[in-house]
Length: 355
Image (cartoon, rainbow, N blue to C red):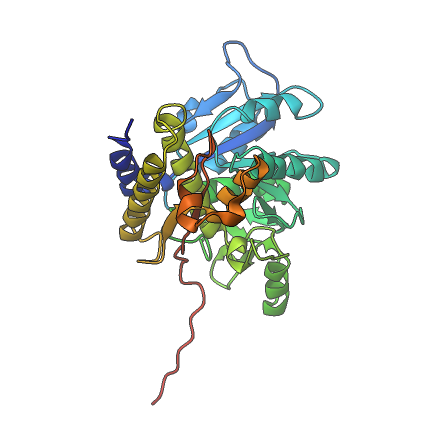
């Protein structure tokens, strides 16, 4: 049994990656009562879809999320939470697709536990989502630690947590081809002022901040809360843009493999090679779309992973050649390894002018 269509599907996923990545989905958990005729959760594509029964504060939170950046979010999914905790809302959001979540009335005492839930989704459940949380030093790529206070607009002054919905919408409306660094928030008149040294220190500590450059308020550097790097999580993992592209690639490959490979083809060496070739073609499309660096992306059968698995089922791999290990029967398991180079946005520039 072969894979007659998977290569085409992967190429299609690659050519549409930018279009799909232009507009993400924002999830909100809002404390409110469920009005008559309102189905919970509420899916909102524009302000016209906001139920009249919601409080003015929650209507405002949804509108903040809808503002986006270069694009508006694809949609906002608002879960109306009537319970004292977030368990039911979290249970629901584990079953649907979204990109960024915010809880505008979250209690300070609940922030750490909520961050742990998002980390668990990413680390253990293969659900690549992110949360914008107030003053949350989570040290994790899935948590954006929003840390600006006294955000002044024409109508009111917002606290940090009250503006997390706006930041979630801004990030969801940032195309994969650019970064949210220096994104202007035109509705904001002022915010807490930080010196250059204080701003640098905040960013270095994993804080997502707004800065006033004297003419406008804008995002500082678009970073998540990760500060502790390791061999498998380098400096690039601190950049929201990089993580968004990584998550898109993860979701694309997972969806195509789930829909067209798992349980549908025999796990032969030939089919594994076809799969790696198809994923390689997907990477080539991302290169042409400007998301990956050219000629620096490849996928192969994971020799070490395959070897470890064969050992675990009693196969003596020490006497096997590399090609024999690659061609060995791994039952229902597939081990692939990919190396990719994601293109970042220009954020720092140095130049000399001689006269």
